[in-house]
Length: 82
Image (cartoon, rainbow, N blue to C red; front, side):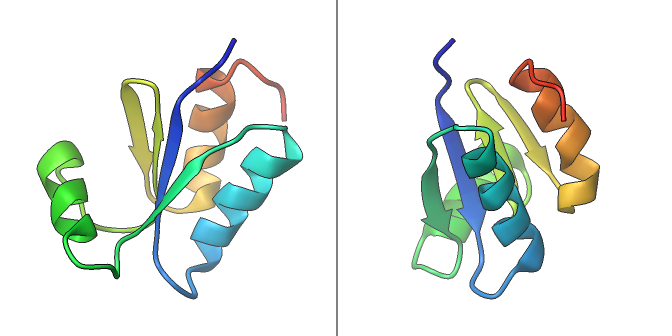
């Protein structure tokens, strides 16, 4: 199944890098949005209620927090075993 995936990231964020690496390792393409760019953090806050990176959006669901916190939720949303 094809998924629309967006990852809100921040420069130097190790959890952001871990989310992106994990998605790539499992063959998922994603769009990256940098919250340090003008308006992006406000967009994240308006859409998802948080401005902390990483925020991972898969189709109509979103997840935030550390990579360790997100990993199980991402695997379930993408129907993969990790």
